[in-house]
Every structure is written in C-alpha cells, then in structure tokens.
Image (cartoon, rainbow, N blue to C red; front, side):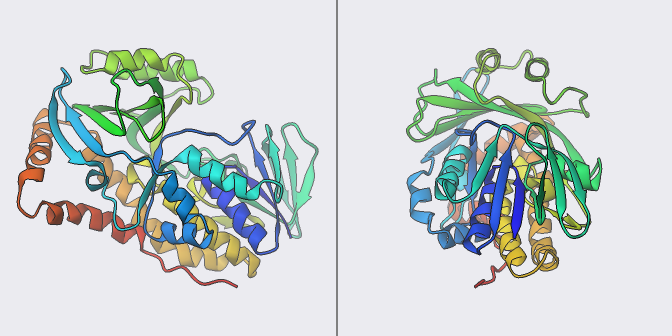
Length: 389
C-alpha cells in the first residue's frame, strides 16, 4: 500500500514511522527544503510518552529535554515578582518531558532516513480521489498516484482545504509569535515572563542553546494579513506591543531579522469527520488544539500512532472512534489556558502574580499546584492505546 503524507512535522513523521513499521510504503512531501530544526519548546505528556516508548525513543528524548529549571515573572523594570519551578509551573506530571520541537523532529527523521521516501521543497496543489486511488498533482514534481493520502500539514492545511473546503478553523481571539533572539539577558535554562493587560511577552533559554527564544501573545480581533509576508507580520507584532515595558522593545527589534520567525492566530480546527474517501487528516490539520493547550505535540504523536496502525489493519473508522474523546478533552484546554496566559485586566494580573508569589511559601503548595497538573494529566491520558500486531 502506497501512502502519501503531506507534511514532515511531528504528526507526519510519526505517521510515516508507524506505517513503515507495519509494512506499508509511505512517501512524505514537505514544502520546506529540509526538516525544520530548533523551534519552540513542546511537551510530551501522558499517553504520548507511551507512544515514544513504543518507538524505542524514550531514552533519546529524555537526553534532549530542555532542562529549563525556573519560570520567573518580572515587572516593567525587570525586577522579579514571582518565581516557580519550571516543571511545577508547566503542569508536568510523572514521565512528561519538555523538548524542542525541532529536536524531536530531527530524532524522528533520523529513524526514517533511508527507509522512507522524502520529497522536500514541494507541496500538493490538487487531489483527485476516484475511489480506487488518489491522483496527486504537485507544485513542482510529476503527478503521481497513491492508495491513500494523509494530510499532516498543520493548522493551515492545504490537504484539508482541497478535500474538505475552507473554514473549520475557529480563532480564539489571540495571536502568537515565536522566534530566535540573542541571549542578551544571559539566561541559563530559565524563563522570564512579563504581563500587561491583553499582551504577554516571555524569553527563555534551553539546554545547550547559545541563543534564546522570544514568545509573544496578544488579544486581538481577527486580523487580515498575508500568511506568506513575514515583514507584514513583524509590523503587526510591533504595533501590538508598542509602548510595552521590560525587554519588549529590544526583543521586538530583534524580530526584524530573527531566524525561525513564526506568527499565527491561536485557533482550533473542528471537523465532524477527519476522513473523506481515501484522504485522511491527522495532527493539527485534523484537530489543532492551539499552542495554548500545551497538547499539540502529544495529540500529533498519539493520533499518528492510532491512524497508522488502524490503516494497517484496514481503515479509518476506528481511528475516528478511538480518538474523538481524547481530542475533545485536549481541545478544551486551549480556550481555558489562554485566559491565564494573556490576562485582560490589571487587577487580574495583580491577583495572579500575588498567588504565584505566595504559592512556594504556602503549606501544601505541591497539592495546590498539583490540581492544575492533574487537569492537564487527565486530558493527556484520556485514551488507552491498543496493542497492535
């Protein structure tokens, strides 16, 4: 069985891994010229850790963890307001691991190199499903025919648009930008966060990285801009954070020529079905939960595992049945979490920072913080993996 996978992100690479393991023949097409390295830090939580274990990668993933040790909130002058252990603040539980997205992608790619066909620098422009196969036209390459097509091409999935039409994306009313910056604060596996009404800026460093990452989130009505025009996106970001305190002016200036610049809305993808004919979606293309959920990578890993193994055993129907409740539980986290990440009112910011400042000094602090971690953990483990042949 020949399967085309659109997208060489975590969902696409994991799908390719398990299809190959089950004796199918995957081909991965990726618009970029290579696997994207670096990127922002992501969590592998709950059931997704078991997927990594079944791939034989858990020890290697643990060796690549970010090792971020503390999360500190600062005021407009950079003075510390509150500090917490990073794992406690991140709601990590048991074996959960934080890793750079690019490190995980490279690790998966190395397991596939030489075993799976990769077509870089190309993308799908047309899909025609005749019931017995799928004809695929590419932007640059020769038209080809496959038994099935898997869309793993992210929030702005071309595969989804071609097969399911426009729409299906629900914006949450916030935007996010992430990019590399010089580590001018000399951070060592640490995170600094600054909050103003309606906008949040943070900067962090990870294990072995000479640079740092800057991340910005802000509330906004829907914005009309070109998703291919990074200069326009940088200008939107600069306007959104005009007049902000702390290190924001320096970080915004660094955005103008930053590597790995990313800008998009915080959004959910909501579909009644994830397959149509011989085309099926997985990862963010099917059920993006937004970066605010902290569960995008875990959804990608678990979804790819279930999809590939169900395809090997005959179809998509059980993939949909097995994944629906898990997806629903994790998609709830995004809208809930973002209101605590981008805070609307000054008094709400003061209240949150007071709690964060006092929490490490309170008796039973682990239990109090554990309630937050338990909510995330329940969503992260809201599925039981089948043991496939």
